[in-house]
Image (cartoon, rainbow, N blue to C red; front, side, top):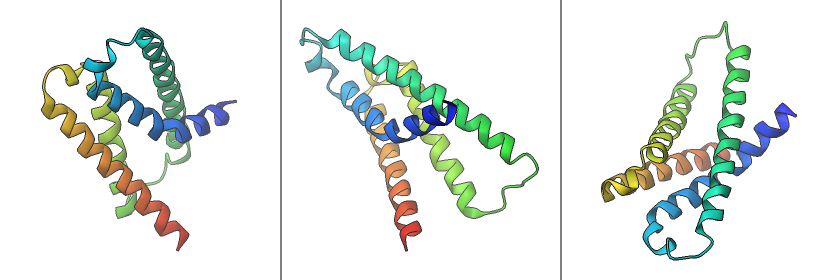
Amino acid sequence: MKYCIIKLSQKLFIPICAIMIFYCLFRESLIQLPYVNILRYILLVLGMLLIVGFSGELLENTNKSKGKKISNVKSITEYVVNYSFYIYFFIYLVFQLDRKSVLFNYLILLIFGIYLGYRFAVRSYRQW
């Protein structure tokens, strides 16, 4: 069951992030829709699924690599890109930075683009 939740959260991460970012960007026009509360609850449940899945993945990875040091540049880059996006996305949603300034929206789009570009580059490198 734990591996099923981890796999599900890994597969749904990018679509959920894209939906949440678009929701935050177009919040002013979506607020007029009658069923926007249902969308909020769905995003909340999916966000909790992501938190549970990634916390399980983080606990699983720390148990596997207790005695190993990170010496590989790829591992360090993966760590920096992934967790910088995770942390900023969490801060962006918790503190509702989309309401503070438009610059935060552009920053999340930039970091999301870097994250997606890195994931695509890693997948294309593995296929070669």
